[in-house]
Image 1: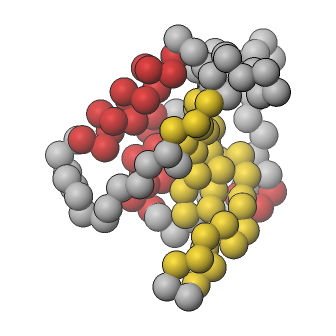
Image 2: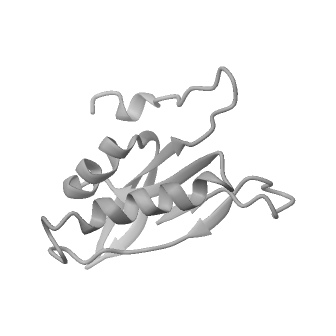
Length: 114
């Protein structure tokens, strides 16, 4: 899932939503996923200051996809999903497109080991 800025919202003046899910192995190695991530970033660039997404903490392929595109982990959502009777944690990730001056992504202690 990802969230990009939408300037038309009043309460969250710089955020909008886009959701997605990729099936394991779908188009693996084709570069399609990387192209889609880049397309989302470029589409959001004219409307957003940042793009956010969530990734299940055990989904190493997704983390390897997002990190080279500049996404950084900034939080952990415990028990965010339930799948197959198991509760799964999610990392919250962000990429600034136009960061406010002096702003940096803080890394919580819970992900400092990564």
